[in-house]
Image 1 (cartoon, one colour):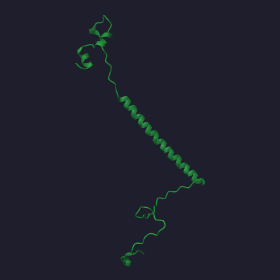
Image 2 (cartoon, helix red, strand yellow):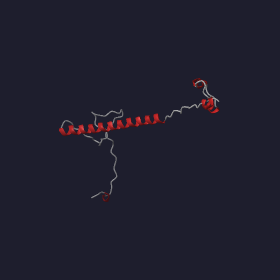
Image 3 (cartoon, one colour):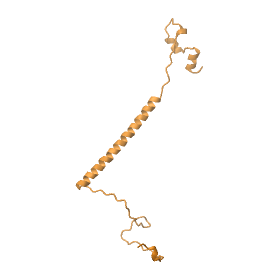
Image 4 (tube, rainbow, N blue to C red):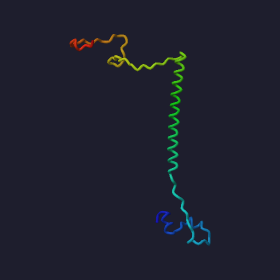
Length: 125
C-alpha cells in the first residue's frame, strides 16, 4: 500500500486525517472525501485561445498597415507628391569575371559564326 488511494480503499486512515477527527466519533461512519485530480484541459485551451487570438490580431494589424500604406501611396501619387512605379522587366546585366559591372569599357564582341540560311518558305509573309 504505497499510494494514499490504496490506504483509503483498505480502510486505513492516515495519521494527519486521524488527528482531525473529533474525539468520540464512530470511525466506521467517517467518510473521507478525496479531492479530484487537477484537470489540465482548461489551461491548455486557454493558452491555445490566447495564441490564436494574438495571431489573429497580428494578421489584422498587418492587413490594416498594408491598406494604409497603399492608400498613402495612391494619395501622394495622385497629388503629384510621389511617383511609384514597379518595373517587372529586368534587363540582363553583363558582369565581368570579378563580378562587377563594366562602366567605362565597351562589351567584348564575340567572333561571329556563320549562320545557316533558311529557305524562303520558312519565313512568314
